[in-house]
Length: 224
Image (tube, rainbow, N blue to C red; front, side, top):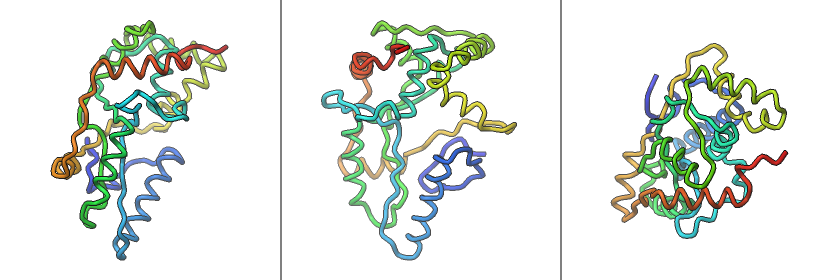
């Protein structure tokens, strides 16, 4: 097992538990096979795509964003587990992602797999606090109690749809032990620094701005 996925890694014994992750793995493998035969190509593994830093605008299909879907599920439940408070995550403003990709596209051919995502980490507790600041408070509880809350919520068909990503992840292991694997972008960052690029620090104002934007679009409201 590994704790971090680096730019020079593809297969490390991971279980392909969905068509989505499997298709991404197979696509990367196919590209790398062609690169070995002379193709000039880049593989960009992005992070949590987030609203633009410039004006807070987000992708039109933000409801299909996995991270946002999980955030909505937490908001709908009204609870999170205490042990999730220190979980790290990052938010990559989409305008900066585009700039980083354009910069990296100019890098030497030998640099094939790159990780253009924000290297400034946040804690989930930061996000929980920001939800409270926009009037959508969520509360911590022990994992056993949380499991009961989820179980009750699944009895509501609409809530079951919202929680589908959580449940799919919980059931994907099929008896296997699940390990958390983060992504490392040290190599990519050294390249970006040399290309004159830096990610913006994710401020509380930025988080509040995009959460307000989502709230204004009724993202956190129950529509049933």
